[in-house]
Structure formats: C-alpha cells, structure tokens
Image (cartoon, rainbow, N blue to C red; front, side):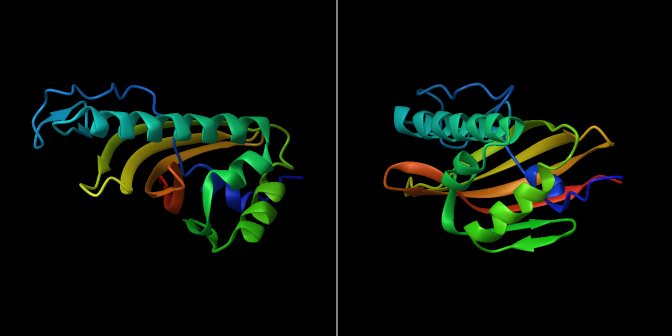
Length: 165
C-alpha cells in the first residue's frame, strides 16, 4: 500500500543550502554571487549564512523524521502551501509530517539557489529546488520560503512548494 504523503510534497519545500557560497563583505548591494544577493556588510553575508544553516537543519530534521526540530524551525503562525493542500499552524504541520513519516523511507534533499535579505535584516526569502524519495516513489520541484527573524533566530514563516510535472 502506498503511503499518502501530502507533506512529502510540502516537506519538499525547503531548504539545504548546498552550492550557495557566502557573500563577500566587499560586494556591492546590487551584485550577485551564484544567485545570492549580497550586500556591502559582513552582516548581510552573516544573515545569509544563518539562513543556509537553518535550511540545512531543516533537511537533516526531515531525513531524521524529527518532528520537534521541524516545528521549532517554523514561526508559530507559519503557513505551508504544497501541491496537495496547506497547513496554517504548528499542530497541522505535525499532523502532516507524521503522515509523511509513515512512508517506508524518507530521503529529502534541498538546494537554495537564491537568498535575499531585506535591508531591515529581519525578513528574507529564498528559492530552492528539492527532491524527495519515500521508498515508493520520488518527486521533485521548487519552493519559495519567507524567513522571519524571531528572537534573533531565522524561522520559516511561509513556504510555498510545487511539484514538477
């Protein structure tokens, strides 16, 4: 019997930051390095690095089926939209992830291709490409996430994922 994984499409929504190098502190505000918008300060590069680290934590948590870490990586009012539906709170996310994690296996990858941090330094967005193999099939697509800094920590506040094909 094939596991139903609406979240698998959502879990896909994410984020490991493979292949996006840190921005050079001397780059201009309009310059671009491998798809990551860079600023004139070390702070901008530091913010991008922090978002990449959170994205990598997300990918590790999905592959470990770690509900607690996944919930902690999102704001309490996060909205996740994926091909099969949407969730608008942490309880809904936990339920969807629990269903997804019932699959025979979970192998998730994610690669951020662009990160932009607002000049305010407390809001950012990224674009990524993801893939998910659940043992009964694999799929892939893209995602756009909005990140919000909460208590000095970047958290996912919106995540819109789509499946290719």
